[in-house]
Amino acid sequence: MAQAAAPLLDEVYGAIADPTRRAILAVLAGGEATVGALADRFPISFNGVSKHVKVLERAGIVERAIRGCEHRLRLNPAPLREAASWLEHYRAFWEMRLEGLEAFVAKQQRSTPSGRARQTRQTGRVSGARVRHRARPDASAAPAGELRVAPAGVDEHRPAA
Image 1: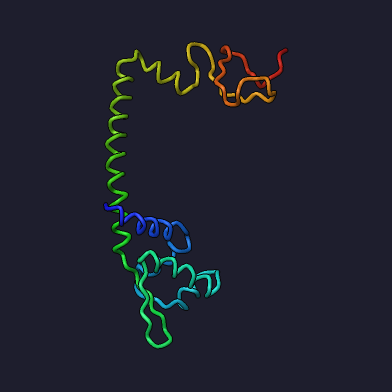
Image 2 (image 1 turned 135 degrees about the vertical axis):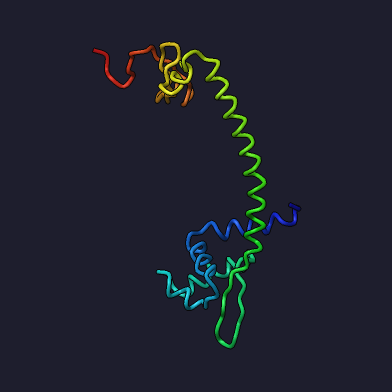
């Protein structure tokens, strides 16, 4: 994708970020509609629907045809296809990376006796200790979020007996 396509992608993703605009697109996917017909379907004012339609028009997703005093709207799927194509490139990249991670984890589990390392990660216990992130309220203490290790069997949230 060229750099010139980036502003269009920004407009498209910005336009479809709003649930009302996505609902408008769903209506227009079924065929042409007037702004008035769209306004009747939503719990917002005619002017509110009109503003949403203008955002979709700026992104090129909706086209308007004026016949007399009637404004007919129709879906233009080309910008959505371009946005989907851009996203597809990254989906393929992440799927490849996740497959590699999955293979690594499977190899680690096979090389660890009886899956013990996996169990300790799931339970949060490491070599008989519980790992915690704690924020210390006093200013002289360690920074917030510092890693703390409490001995196994010690519950820091209960007062000592």
